[in-house]
Amino acid sequence: MIPTIEWDGKYVRMIDQRKIPSRIEWYVCRGYRDVIKAIEKMVIRGAPAIGVAAAMGLALGGFSIRTKSTATFMDKFRKIAEEMLLGRPTAVNLRWAVERMENLVERMGAALVDEIRRALKEESEKILAEDIEINRRMGWNGQRLVPARATILTHCNAGSLATGGYGTALGVIRAAHEKGKKIKVIADETRPWLQGLRLTAFELMEDGIPVTVIVDNAAGSLMRQGMIDLVITGADRIAANGDVANKIGTYQVAVLAKTNKVPFYVAAPLSTIDSTTKNGDMIPVEERGGDEIFRFGKMRIGPSGVSVLNPAFDITPAKYVSAIITEKGVIRPPFRKGIKDLLS
Ligand code: MRU
Image (cartoon, rainbow, N blue to C red; front, side, top):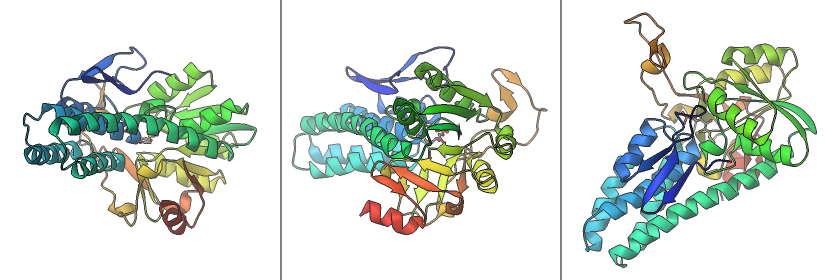
């Protein structure tokens, strides 16, 4: 499994996910602004991976603050944290990681600046290691829902590359495969960034898990023909009532799953649950540029001047979700109570 992101001496490097599968190339971030740019430009993507990147970016930010005064350091650090939050709006893991790093700095108010800098780097390494461990636990919890022989549909990439490692939805699939279950995966290609075709297919092939790619609009037809046993996706944010924000197209997959009596599972760490957001309507949905749709590589494929809408995520109401798989256990409806109990 190739790493998603790591420290390389005093810099942070991440696999440039825009280049996969053509090339495996490191993208080096020398300062926190490089990390913000990498998040905005999709060098690194996927909710938990964005969280890890933000934490490492803030540690880089700490090293860039030139002062010996703790008060000045804290002031400047808060400004960097505000900038980091602007990276991408939907994945709550970004805010979660920024708050965790800010809390650390607050707690160290009496320490020397050098000690705070070191602690920030260590905390970011801890977040990365914890994320991998969480995904393994989630995988273990989730694989129990997978029959001994199953064809699983997934949307986007909720794999190793979308996290610190191992993956959320793909973590469940990996754990089921490791348990010896006979798994086949159908991966939606996931327009417009093709995370399913480029990243999910790449990861699963590397692991020797059979994978077949379909165009997004084939999912319903396959379900109707009984070719899908269950659906597993990741999430970018889960509201307190269980509504799920995930890659655009997830909602239609969930509705089709319910219509065809196919279980629809969401695998996500507790850091993706935002109990301050009451329901899905309150989740900010990122709108990205039209170029992503009407250009294919360097070629324009839409008529010049055409208007385009490009929401990057959608909201799947909780009533379409069969269960939410977390590192602490599986939550079944009614989600509001299940989420509250698990977070307390
Ligand atoms: O735009 P992206 O590629 O960041 O969107 C990623 C997704 O929607 C994933 O499904 C989600 O972050 C879960 S990743 C474990």
